[in-house]
Length: 108
Length: 112
Image 1 (cartoon, rainbow over the protein chains, first blue to last red):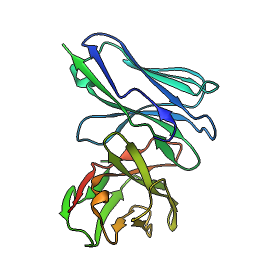
Image 2: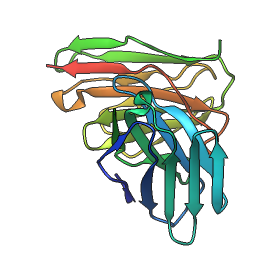
Image 3: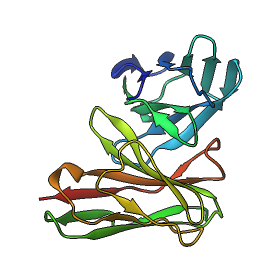
C-alpha cells in the first residue's frame, strides 16, 4: 500500500538467515518501522530506523538507506516461531503508512 | 500492565445498524490511531488523534467517525455500517507518531 513495496511471501529453513526487503517513497520520510504480526494477532514492534545504517537487536537486524528509499529486515538463526507476517511502515506527516506485509513461512 | 484494549473483539451486525468499537490505553499516550486490515492491502489508517479533542482523517475515513474526549479513550463509530466495512480493526497508541505504536488485540467486524 501507498508506495511501500515488499515481497508478498517468502519461505526459509529453520536455522537459516532471511532478508526481507522494503522500498518506499522518500518524500516526507520520518523513520522506518518493522513490525511482526502472527496470524490473528496484533502487530508487535520489532525495530525503528531513522538514520542510515544497521541496527542490531539479537537475532533481528534492520538496515536503512534514506537516499535509496530502501530498508531490509534480517532474521538470523530462524526458528519455527518466526513464521509470521512482517510489516514495513514508513513514518510520514503525523501518520504511519504500512506496506501490505511479507508472509514468512519457516519450515524444518 | 501497559496495554491497549478494544471491545468487542468480535462483532457480527447488519447493514445500517450503528455501532461503536471502544479503544482504551493506560500508558498516557497522546497519539492514538485506528486501522483496518484487509487481505492484500495491509494496515490502512482510518483516523488518528494527536491529543484530546484533536482528530484528523487518515487514508480511509469514509463511513467512520471518531472522538477523543479523554486522553485514554478513542472510540470508532460506524453510523451506518455497510458490508464493505467488514474487516479486522486495530486501535494503536504511542507517545507520538514517531514512536513505537502499541496495538490493541483487534476487532473482527462482519457486516451482513
